[in-house]
Length: 205
Image (cartoon, rainbow, N blue to C red):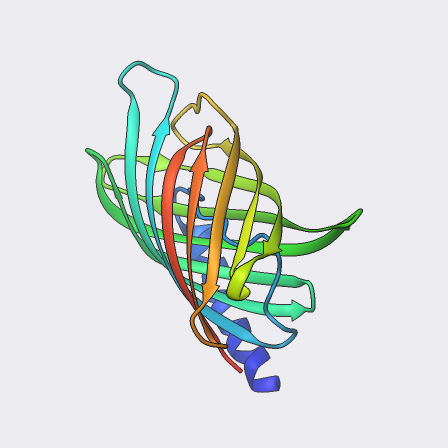
C-alpha cells in the first residue's frame, strides 16, 4: 500500500512540476466520467485523439493528433486523479509534447450515478501555444456483456493564443472489458470540437 502511494506521488509530483513549467495547454478525451479505480489502486491507459476545432474565423479549423499515456490513481473510492504525458501534432504548426492533470469525482444525482471531470492538458508545438481546460458532467449505463456506454456535457475554456467559437460540447462513448484488467474504448465529442478517440486501459491489482 505504502509503495503504491509512494510511486503514485512520484508520478503525480513529476507531472505537476512539468504542468506548471510547460508554456501552454490543451484538454481532450473525457472517457468514462465515473471514478472507477479502487482506493489505493492504479491503472495505466493509452489514448489516441483525432481532433478538429473551430476557432471562429473563416477557414480557421485546426486539426490536432494526440497520443497520450495516462496514469490513474484511486485516492478513495469515488475519487480518481490522473496524469497524462505524450506527443501532439498540430496542423501547420508541427509536433510538441503534451502533459496534463485531471480528476474524476462520483456524484449521486437522483437515480443516476454521475461523474464530475476536471482536466487540463498542456502542449506546445513549433509555432503554437494553447491552453484549454475542460469541465464535464456525465453518466454511464452498463449494457450487454459488461459493456459500459456513457455520455454527458462539457464546458471548455481557452486561455492560450486562440479564441474558440464554442465552449459547450457533448461527448458519448463506450468501454468494453476484454479481461478483468484490460479494457478498450472509443469516444466521440462534438460542438466545442469534433474529435474521435480510441483508448486502452490496464488496471493493476
